[in-house]
Amino acid sequence: MPGNPNEIKLVNNAMANATRRKIMNFLNEGDRTVEEIGAAAGKTMLDFHLKLLQQAGLIELKGDTASLSEYGRNFLKGKEENEQGKGADLSQAKPIEITEVRQLLPCIADSSKFRTIANMAPPPGGVLKVLEPIFPRGRYSDGIGALIIQQNEVITTIYGTGKVTITMIKSEEEARSRLENLKNTINEAIAKGVAPAPREKVRVEPLEIYKYLPQTNCGICGEQSCYTFAIKLMGGETSLDKCTPLKEPKYAINLEHLQVLSAYI
Ligand code: SF4
Image (tube, rainbow, N blue to C red):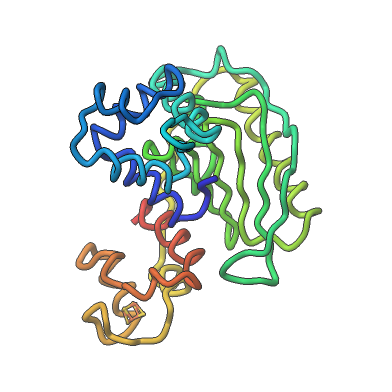
């Protein structure tokens, strides 16, 4: 199930193509044979499109039949609710509960820390977009239908489907405490029944950017040092993708942080 930046990228890539979106919508009506999909969405590069959707975890292929995976179904449902939720206030929203803390896995970037997956109910759907301003460093991503919140080292991602992931936590106790705080913050906003006022821009300092860069001063980005890169990034003179070392798996969490911070530059 997509959660980390690489997996999210696979989903974004898969859904960026009109034929693949057409296939997803077609499968939303029920399981179909590859031949039926070809007749509805076109046969050109059909195997390639199906493979990409399968790799992104959106569909399942069994023999000659394709069907939406559970994640694929929830993804489409979340997107639909997001569309409906555009411009909505919170008057119709229901208080949420954390129904399940499913897994506690070691973090890819730091094996002394954990990543947890939980569920909230009812699924917040498009309400998440309205909730964005209550989190000082929260960013709603239309691409994945999720609200991404940064609090120091910890990144919390709440999906419209109700899935919640939290990275870089120290223990299950911390995970439960963060989930409880999250629930209370969201429910307080829902109890008020109106969309929170747009937040003030949170200032990002070059040192904060620098903290999450590889700090190797390798020069691949064309800058003399990582700190120079941080300053230029702040000034809009370079872009995050120029630091290619960040694509290495060991920097996955750093990249996630930098992507959130970039929204505030
Ligand atoms: S490519 Fe990245 S790691 Fe290398 S100097 Fe530039 S910012 Fe630093």
